[in-house]
Amino acid sequence: MKDSTKSLALLAAAVFPLTGYCADVAPTARMEVMEIPGSQLQDNPLHDPVKRNIAAFFPAQSAPLRRLPVVYYLPGYGGSSEEFINARQTWIDFVQRVSDQIAPFILVVVDARTRWGGSQYLDSSAQGNYAAYICDEIVPLFEQAHHLQLAANERIVAGHSSGGFGALRLGMMQRKLFGAVIALSPDSDFPTTHLPLVETASARSVSPAEIEKIVATPDVSNGSAKLDRYLICLSAAYAPASPGNPGRFEWLYDDKGAFQPKVWERWLANDPLTLVREHQDAFASEQRVYLDGAAQDDFKANIGARKIFEVLSARHADCDFYEPPGHHSDHMQERLERGLAWVFGKPTLDIK
Image (cartoon, rainbow, N blue to C red; front, side, top):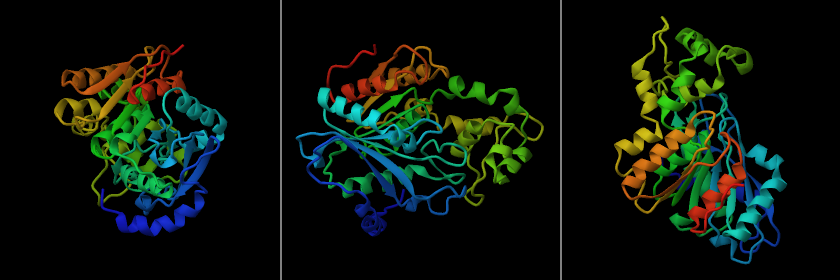
């Protein structure tokens, strides 16, 4: 990710008037919608929107706003800040409850959707620079707009499912930016979570030529009717073609329907479990890593989360794992609340 100090200075004047903030006092809990110009998404190959909204939720608190820790939340596949904006009172109440019972904080929800439904929060020539968009643009612009003065341990990246994957990956990529990671049912252990999706009859029946037609079809609903868009999203994130072929990616099956191990290796190279196994310093020693996975997780995301925890705990990393009851997306607020309690050093909360 390139140094964007100059571009941030130019963007600041355009962004700051949208905030309507008071730097030190938040008399009532509230939501604020802030438009981010999206300079990192300019000329993205899928022609997806450049300007995006973030949703920021603030508690009513006595402490100076500028010192409140910030949780940057990454929604799961297909999700965005819009759902949180539409359910604003639910999330205002959540932030206030956690602030009262655990610790005051600000919740910022991002929008990193693509034509294929999600970006996995990675930079890719097949989709655009979404990791850079979050780390080099959203984080500094939001914090500059509100005069926040944060140490690294006061900045947390969190997410669920694809967002949990993104939280792990951004936490690894930006170890000095994020002091803690909360990954709820994250995509990981791809042979367990992704391979069953890849090996379905519908996936095996699609040729590279058909993928090319899908990519070239403006109407996504028609062009990808034969294939789940989620697999296209994952392919674009994990196996982009060369930078000289923007918007294109390698498909896992050749024109004869044979599985391509070399492409699968590119997927595995993005697996958080692979990365923590292969890299002793995947996370900085001072980072805190919280993982969970529902006991009846529909995609078996609990298995990979537990394996990551086992690797990290064997290295005496500051980490925790919790396996709540329920399915992949059950009890999301309670699970996030428990993760926040652990990160903030408070007694963890049991899910009722």
